[in-house]
Image (cartoon, rainbow over all chains, first blue to last red; front, side, top):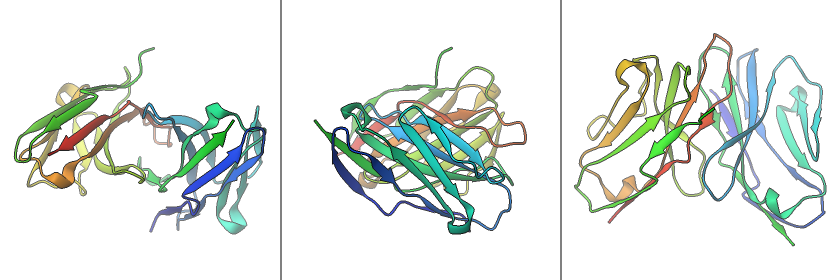
Length: 114
Length: 115
């Protein structure tokens, strides 16, 4: 079975604080991909990152960083020095390489307070 | 390059009425998805097309929902008749499938309200 769990439903932080969004996944596939998407109030899900299961290197892109740990089946997302524009719902997703399918978590709603 | 285009953005109808949503994917993308997103939830797959073929429609409620993707480009999702529980956002996404998973590109969604 394929499953993505985002236990944090809502998070509020004050601007400039760091925040980490958790993502835990379940899959029996040995090859798979993990994604993060951002959904601002406008509604369109925006792709942020894709990682494959063989690449456990952490990645940093500006204020965004991702920590992939196979041992704990987690793919956490950290925003450093948060800004009001970071306010959105963030989704973690899993895609096994057995097919062109995607499984989404329930999302974490982040509010950055000025 | 144009993104995924969906219309209408908003639709309000009374129950038992029909409704249709249209999606134009990114040019060259061979895979098209329709997702349902309820408030506070993640997208849930309704149907996936690879070119013209519906390869995964197991979650599509076929008694009232139908979809088509003529010529492997645009797609239409129809609900007839609509029920109160169909109120949600209907998302269209596309990707270029090469045998390895590529990222999804989403449209802005069509928000349906059934009264």
